[in-house]
Image (cartoon, rainbow, N blue to C red):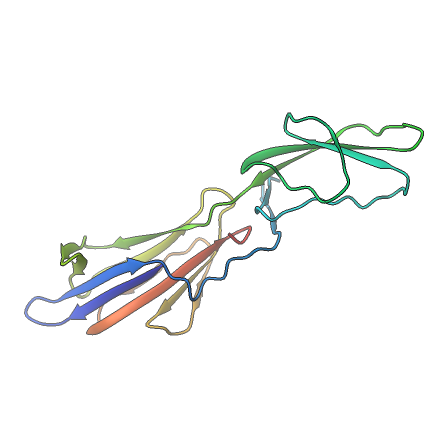
Length: 192
C-alpha cells in the first residue's frame, strides 16, 4: 500500500492524500513456511508440502486429507484446502504390518495481512482526493485473523523501511509542508 498526502500550511492547513497498491517494496514469498502458535495450531502457507522420511526402505506410506479416499504416498503432497485440514497417515511394511493411524491438524493460511489507515480527524474529499488538517495523526495498523501479523514495514518519502514490532501500530503527525508518501506492507506468520 502506498499512501500519498500533501500538507499545506496557510490560513486553513490541510493535507491531501490518496492510496494505491505498492509493488516495489513487497516481495511475494513462494517458499514453504510454517508457524506453530501458542495453542499448538500448525499454520502453513499455500506452498507447504509434506514428505516422509522413509525409515524402512520397503515400507509403504498411505495418507488421506480430510474425508477423501486413502492414497499411497509417492511424491510430496500439498494440503487441498485453505483453512482447516486433517491429514491422516500410516506406514505399512512388506508383510502388511500396519502402524496405527496418525493424524495431523493444520491450517492453510493463504491470506495476507490487511493494513488499516486510521486518521484522528476524518478526512474530506476534494477532486477525488482526501484532505486532512495539518497536525492530524495518521496510524497504520496491520491485521491478520489467521496466523497473525509477523511484521509491518513502513517507509516515509522513500526513506529507510522501518520494521514495526509485532502487535504495534505505526503513528505519525502530518506536520511538514509539501507532498509526502508512505509505503507500507506486512507479512503474516507464514509470510503471506
